[in-house]
Length: 204
Image (cartoon, rainbow, N blue to C red; front, side, top):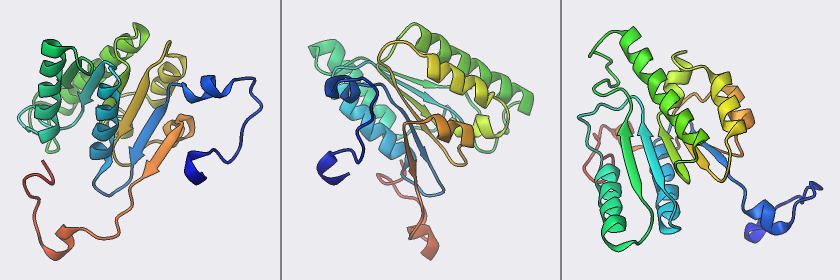
């Protein structure tokens, strides 16, 4: 893609403008850090365009405060007070369950994740947001808590102009096949390899 030009121009009957303004499904997967970071970077661009931003965090604990959440909530306030950018909503799906999954049973977590997905599906149908970040959503798919085929079907049939970004390791192949843009984060080197723990401003 030299200088942002596509390698192939499809014969799909669409104009350049129509093809440029097409809602995308984006997947950031792979073992390396940066998947959520990249998704929130795209969300910042969307906010600047005036889009409504909806962030839905799966897996992370309700008590886990990440820097991006504080920043996006502040941007939501900026929009409310000045009209700049777009509105922002940030939701933790399944309050209180985390990587350890100690709070509640697995059935509780599965039910919470499924209800979280169903709420997202309702919002997609009603065209609530311009850009959705489904953070760590690949895990409920991998664990079988949310049906991948259902997710792909809802994404394929979503109306209007709605971008959807999904992050997490081990994204199901069916989701990768459907997505318009897939990035695989591959580890080359990481500070933890030399015993360094996560640090403020880098990991959270």
